[in-house]
Amino acid sequence: MKYLPNILDIKAETTLNLLLARAKKVKTHSIDEYIESGGYKALKKALSMDPKEIIDWVDKSQLRGRGGAGFPTGKKWQFAVQNPPPRYFICNADESEPGTFKDRVLIERDPHLLIEGMIISSYAIGAEKAFIYIRGEYPAGYYILRNAIEEAKSRGFLGNNILGSGYSLDIYVARGGGAYICGEETALIESLEGKRGHPRLKPPFPVQKGLWGCPTVVNNVETICNIPIIVEKGWEEYRYIGPSEYPGPKLFPVSGKVKKPGVYELPMNTTLRELIFKYAGGTLGNKKIKAILSGALDCFSADELDTPMDYSPKGFGGTGTVIVLTEEDNIVELCLKIAEFYEHESCGQCTPCRVGCYEQHNLLKKIIKGDASEKDWEAFVYINKHIQPTSICGLGAVAGRLIRQAMEKFPKEFERYKPTVVKY
Amino acid sequence: MFEKELEEKLKDHINYFPRKEQAILMCLHEIQNHYGYIPKESLKPLSDMLGLPLNHVEGVVAFYDMFDTESPARHRIRVCVSIVCHFMQKDKLISALKKKLGIEMGEVTEDGRFKLIPVQCIGGCSEAPLFMIDEDTYKFEGEEKLDEILAKYT
Ligand SMILES: Cc1cc2nc3c(=O)[nH]c(=O)nc-3n(C[C@H](O)[C@H](O)[C@H](O)COP(=O)(O)O)c2cc1C
Ligand code: SF4
Ligand code: FES
Image 1 (cartoon, each protein chain N blue to C red):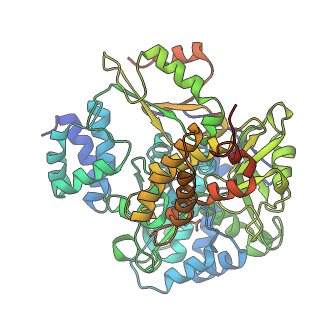
Image 2 (cartoon, rainbow over the protein chains, first blue to last red):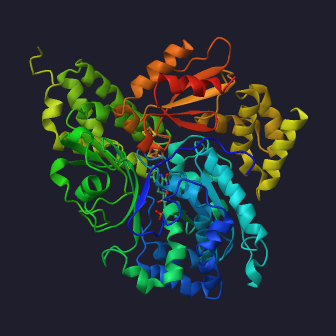
Image 3 (cartoon, chains in turn green, cyan):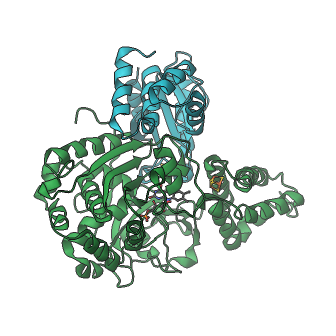
């Protein structure tokens, strides 16, 4: 590659050697290195299979989407192929949830794993054009992917009549412009059409009417990187990775007050405690854990360290993001940062979300200064509860959630900001 | 109209995608890289090239955070002020930058060399606190190292 911006040496460790088999090394793997280590074998196998059979395998593998919602990937593909072509396949590489940097590691270090996954996925759903939408703040990833696509084309893995199979596919890479909301799949599609990233009302879902009104599958980077693994191993063997209900490798980006922050690839029967203490080295200065955040979504207390890192109702779920805060960290200050994030990222389309996120942030600023009256407190609690109804997308639905959980789990932290408490 | 070299780059982006208008964000990045911001006068010729109404292009520019039509700066320093960096001492990084550059967040140095911009999570939180200069991403490793990094951008 002619030019590559400076990138980070993020620590990546794995007990499974699947998603991070190569990406645990801090380097961008070329197509030769990828092929030498067994890459593009799964593509050859997939092209000899019936597309329906691949969808069936992915369904039976019980793979769930790694972009946050945990939706079964095979089911999503089945819905898409019920609708007539042209169909499109989109890789969501917008990764902007605070604390999340797992897709970055895959893109920057093992781009061909993603591309192989995209070719197989596109073949399975019958798409002849596929897109990668990568966040504007990952310019290195953009150049790496553009380069890897050229490499793949030159070997006949992409373009016309792939490996003589009669199947043709082009993959295009598009950059975002710094808007968290464009990670929401319908906002992403709008953005990819050259518009502002305003989420669409669902239904219709993208599998019904997505890009240019055509059936479209949107999958996360990590989800797609599982596809070559499933095809190569077969769904039965894949099901033996990790616990039987939640099979497959999972990436956990761990940051905050731990000794060994980084991305960990582990099976989903790992607990939050094991992830933090066994793998991430425990807390900085061996301080007591106060809270663990799954990005800007959920807040766990130290009593919840036995939470399994899976998609069960009581599991950690989401993107697998783990941010650790310890005893000296202020929970109300955390809530202020969360409120600031949602205010900044609300796209402004729905009034309750736009006004609610603004007011939530505003009132928290007052609270933390100690200037909030009892009325302000009431307004704050009310607004926090009421951002959700009538919001078009998931952002409005969760903008009050972490803060509400924090108030429930750490009431004492909020008490000292209340007007009835005498301040010294 | 654009200078030849920039125009060629914009054309490359536009020809790359199945539909012209998909190239809009790529073109805006390219224009911003070229001029150090997005001059308002560039939007009309861009809208012509993309086959889009001018107000559509204006709406897009206003929507996406990375694009700046106000203040030219040769280099953009984006400092993460999001959750992890906040608790991992982003304030030290910010005060070092402010001191060295003599500006506040959101401002441009007098010589037009740097603009300091607060941003949400830039996706490298294990290395927090983080910042980007143009397309490069860095972690904060003390003031001396910061001097070395800044010196690369003239
Ligand atoms: C506000 C918001 C932001 C999102 N951001 C991302 C993101 O950055 N990356 C991602 O893969 N999914 C993101 N999602 C989820 C996507 O809408 C979509 O569900 C996902 O890309 C589907 O892929 P999967 O089934 O493989 O998980 C976001 C959702 C919401 C509501
Ligand atoms: S809920 Fe918020 S972010 Fe989502 S569409 Fe409405 S205003 Fe935009
Ligand atoms: S919070 Fe600063 S990079 Fe993620």
